[in-house]
Length: 450
View 1 (spheres, one colour):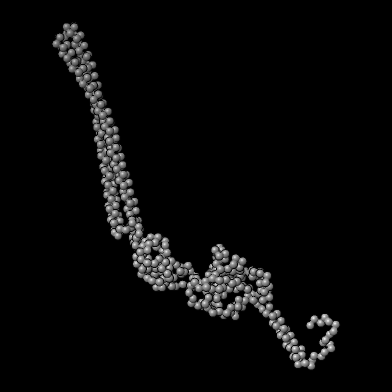
View 2 (cartoon, rainbow, N blue to C red):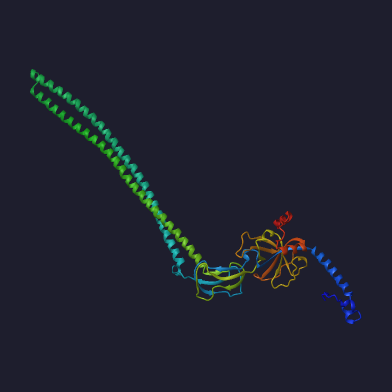
């Protein structure tokens, strides 16, 4: 009642005699309730001062620790057409096992004897290279022979020049002797003519000396002609030397030109042989690519190209394979505001989807069904989902992870500092991030050693 009236009924009427009043206004229960409130208040105060482990939660999925252990697709480096499948989805294959066989779709590779024909072309071109090599050797021998012949010809021409010079000397001496003889003949003729005038010599003597003088003059002219002819022979010998040199220079130059032409053809043939050998190797390797083989031991997940006769381009995905041997890891994502609190080597608690667990995020020691992990890699650049990717490996000091398929979901909790519960409640109510901290030097050294 509001008790606003001046006429107070509770003072005029005694209600204690009624049974209902006794049951309602009995004060004994106040005692237990107050005791309960006191115990509850003390318990709450004690709980508020209990330690609470700050944590960063995240969602991720199971993957493998190493990139070569993750699911992969098999591509064909060449375009082709599917001819035959040797496996089906779910089969286990070993490294090198044939998965499917393909055939060519490009017309330049249709010839089934392409490799053999290319080998024949290589042999033909190799023989051409050998022919050019022999031709170069023959031209070298020809050039050497021309050099030797030029030396002999020049020596012969020089000898002839020397003979001509000696003949000029001989003829010049004879010419000088003829000059002396004509002087003597002229003096004798003049003396005989003088004596004939004085009557001391007969006319026949004069005629005889005149005849001798004429013979001497004729001989002088003959010797002069011989001398001039000898000088012409010297000139001819010099001309011959120049001609021989010019002739053999032309021959040797032509031989060298033919040699260089043959060498050029040889190098071109060698280049063609190298190109054909390259094509031969490429064709041989291309034939091996008709069989798509397993790169490692694993299970066939899914055929991305099905049927027979279906064509595809180079680089198209044909089949998906999951390696049989792998090390499990968890890939999770953390908000950018929490990434400064994550360090390599930090302890992580993991709850796997489909695996029973009772989780107390602040009290990891009393949680059930969670497994330990350790941060092994932190992405240095933000992912497409706006978070940073963290890779977590099993903690060797904790329980062994259960056998779960790769790709299963997982929830992670990164354990941070221990704080009182009241501080954590205050932080959560105000929306503050967890306490920023750096791991100790000993912790960093242990993680690096591992």
